[in-house]
Length: 74
Image 1 (cartoon, rainbow, N blue to C red):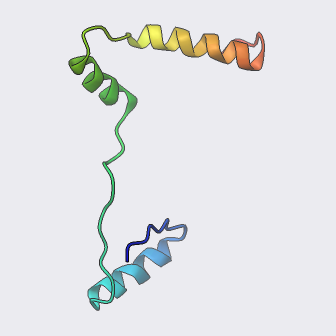
Image 2 (cartoon, rainbow, N blue to C red; image 1 turned 60 degrees about the vertical axis):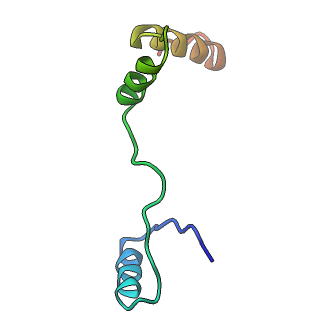
């Protein structure tokens, strides 16, 4: 059986580590490590023929924010 657990208190992590040391449970890191947006964009640009620049992305984000939140400048 496999469960996904989100640790909210650091003390719980120590308890889980103790259980793993007693061979009662197994702990595996899941997923990929979090990447910065710049690294993700860099990887996407390598794979794509045409990719937006950071300035283009920022302009588009600001347009969407203005539409969503009104004419406030972000």
